[in-house]
Amino acid sequence: MDVFQADSSKVNRVTVELAGEQPLKIERNAEKKLSLTGIPQGQKLKDEAAADAIVRAGAFIDMEDVRKLAAMPTAKDVSTVKIEVEGGLTVTLRLRKDADGQWLSLTAVGEGDAKKTADEITARTAGWEYKIPAAKADALLKRRADLFEKA
Figure 1 (cartoon, one colour):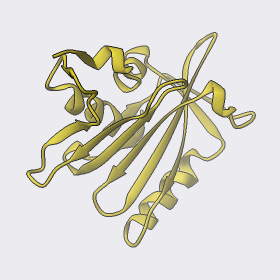
Figure 2 (figure 1 turned 90 degrees about the vertical axis):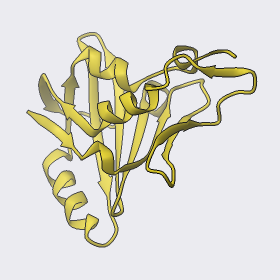
Figure 3 (figure 1 turned 180 degrees about the horizontal axis):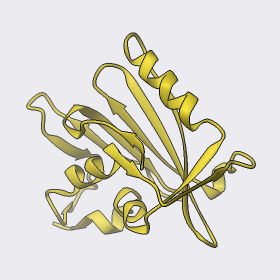
Figure 4 (figure 1 turned 60 degrees about the vertical axis):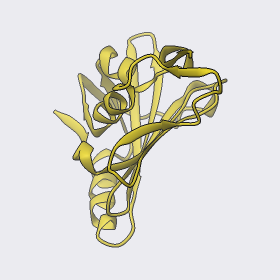
C-alpha cells in the first residue's frame, strides 16, 4: 500500500535535510530537467541521474507496516524530505530510524486546488507513522559524500 504518490515529472523541488549536514536541494529548471543545486566548488556529481533517482523515490512512498504515532519525533532524531509538487502541494516526510527499521510520518499543505489534496493526505495520515523499506530510506536520505566527488 502506498502512503504518498505523486507524478515525479510534476515534482518541482525536493529538499533533503540530514542531521549535521548542509541540506541537499534539487530543483526543476526552465527546461524541465532536475538538478542538484549548490554543488561544492571543485566537486562534481558521481552519478548524473542522482537527482532523478531521489525525486522518483520521494514521489512514491510505500509501506511495510503502520503504527500509531506516540509522539512527534524530536528534530535531532529526524531527517526530513520536503517535496514541492506543481500546483502548490508540499509534502514533508519525517524519517527516523529505530530498532525495527525506518519509520516515516508526513504532513501536507497546499494552496488553491492543492489544498484539497493536502487535506486528504493529512486526514489519512495524521497520527500514524509508516515503516518503509530500507532501500526506500537509502534512496531518499542521500549524504553529500554519497553524491559528490572531486572534479
